[in-house]
Image (cartoon, rainbow, N blue to C red; front, side, top):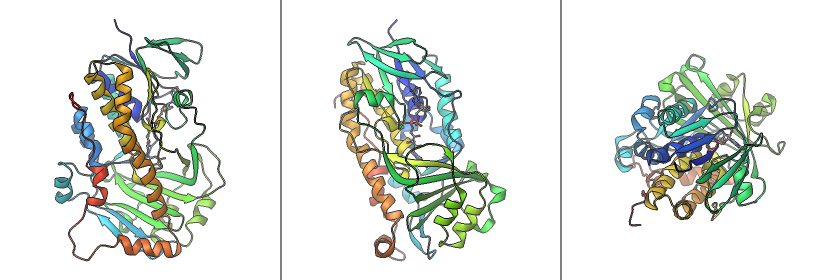
Length: 398
Ligand SMILES: Cc1cc2nc3c(=O)[nH]c(=O)nc-3n(C[C@H](O)[C@H](O)[C@H](O)COP(=O)(O)OP(=O)(O)OC[C@H]3O[C@@H](n4cnc5c(N)ncnc54)[C@H](O)[C@@H]3O)c2cc1C
């Protein structure tokens, strides 16, 4: 029997990669360092580009059962409350423009569960928890993954889906720590009953304030309300998923609209993320080893596309695997060629979007003027088309 594909990391990217490869007939062993396979309890936004990937993976209906479709993406000025711009992502015009798919939002736990159940239903996938990978060795005809505890596991190739602090990346690229952006995110999910009626709406709303923003949208068909609050702070060097400082959060938003303050007040337990990204890389594979998702191209979350990109990566990687007859070095080269510019654009544009959301002074006024649309004008989706049009799937003759 041939050696399995090894996947290090059981986040959204790792599971999607395991599934996409199993669907192409490969045997996969996936190792996750955590004690339990799960995602943080918060929302995630899904562009039409990733719904097409769910279709390819045979998961569209399962995802649709759990996702909800907001009517609009709306940006408001957090100082005045004025609406800056909106994109009607729940409209028929949007669906038609983007190949029959709408914009969606989903609880991370639900998305994760759909992926996990699909992986568990594949006999070709073996998942092990509490297994931490330390390093790898490429022996030319196979890879050897060294685990904490000393075991050495052989595979035909290795996919590092081990996230922002990837060890596999450190060994392939050796490009040091991620870039700390100086932006902090707090995330919380409120039960519907805790959200005042006048603040509840079926839209993704972003309140753009000087060096801050707040996003909210309903989840699980309106049972829950997802909140993400972001502000600039240089108090934190690095860290992930730790409890925050509520006073600092309150201070940062103190001059903003009452709607913003009222939502922030509703939250008791906030967790804090120190947001990081990296400069785009041209190559992230070597021999029989590659990277996928945040390990390859970590991005700030301002386009809400990090997980979307990881899932696109998985589908493209598996498609090239099939095309090359699972010649891994060739597969990884083609996969990188197909992915590096798109993922770099997401990394770079996410920074620009963050700057626009957090603009102050004259820049804020200019932003509001430039994004304003003519009253009564038909919606224009061209600004987001590069992203939501999605990717062309690899074909055998390309
Ligand atoms: C505030 C915020 C909001 C966001 N919103 C969105 C959004 O709306 N839409 C969107 O598409 N994206 C969003 N993202 C980005 C998205 O969460 C990430 O891009 C995505 O989760 C990356 O998935 P991944 O599988 O590549 O990495 P991760 O989720 O980081 O998974 C890596 C996994 O590898 C495991 N691991 C690490 N090292 C080892 C090791 N040595 N051995 C074994 N296992 C290991 C980890 O435990 C982890 O489970 C957001 C991010 C943030 C911070």
